[in-house]
Image: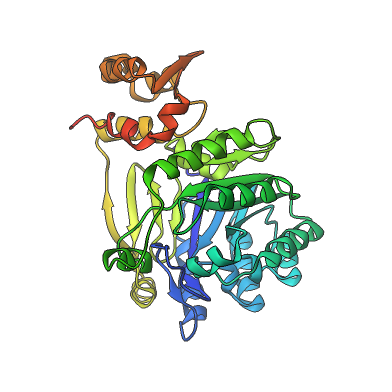
Length: 374
């Protein structure tokens, strides 16, 4: 199968957020230009240069200055031909008109903004660098520059966040000139500031029931808007779904470039080295900067097909499963599907198995049921 998508990781941030466990480093005094040199060299190792989707994430890619940003964009567009979605992650306060115009000039047609909340007190708790006003300015800049698709990320189940706080942020987003909303509940990840604060008793989270209530509020609030749910955490206006992220959920292959990036190529899943200087050294030595790699077994591929595919509203196609693995879905997972249907966590329509609303609320429990070795 030809790889038609790529993810590029820019591991630099102007400030480290309290909840973030991605591979990221405070940009000051980092060898950013050396990193870009190594990254460009790694990108050139790809065997297929004609892509459908490209996603540049981080860290924060917009933490780069204009010269670095242009160097990166020039390299991407000279190495690859991107026929479809070209996405860039951005922080609202870093998305100046000059930067967003630069992105648009090099073909970026989708921007995903890390907004998280509109409430100033919560922005400070999260360690965000932007103010509420920056969100409106960034969206205006992106529209003025001609960006075709704008997505906002919102978080819920945050420390000190009420249902009213989340509802207010959601309503503000709905009423903005944007095309897509992603919304995720906070997960306490090891090695984050939040996790350490929680362990020391210095962080109080809303209870799980409130988190579930916020998620149900999210789905119901967007039901009668132009934003239609197409995945557990993602809602889009017509023709504005994230085609790159669908590559992950459809269990298709993609390149991963940069420190800490993950990829899936020729049936092998791999993750690159995290430390920036280690990554640079490996690439400079003409060695692939891979930390770990594994080839999923047929059993693991079938499990992945289920718990990734079930994230989408449409669900998993019986026909596609059969064609992909040369075995029927019922033969592998029939008992599990029946059990989950009886619990009203799964439903079936037009040859697709998908989550019910209750199934979405406790999605992880449903996904775990498809791990064959349990």
